[in-house]
Length: 92
Image (cartoon, rainbow, N blue to C red; front, side, top):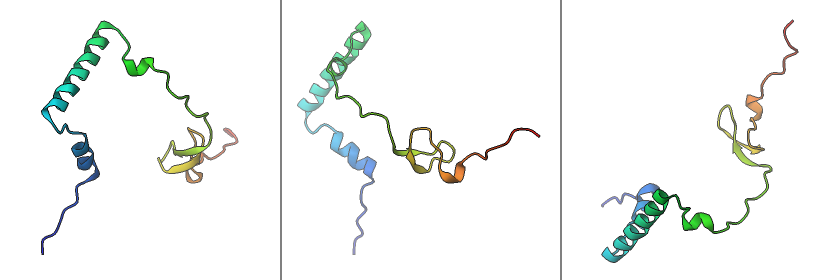
């Protein structure tokens, strides 16, 4: 009985992004070259000129603890309960 190996997620992502036809590959190369030429000329790319949707206001979300990188519900820069710094009364 043959065993089937599933593709890792990154291989599936690369396979989905690769050009399917020679004309698609040529068009991608042309668009890429146009972006490079615009960047060398000091022009902003078309994507940057378009107004994007405003980012949501900062607030509570799942962020990484700044000490141990565990996910924690809090503000950016928060620490998890296990990594809370000990409050010191100062030098005695």
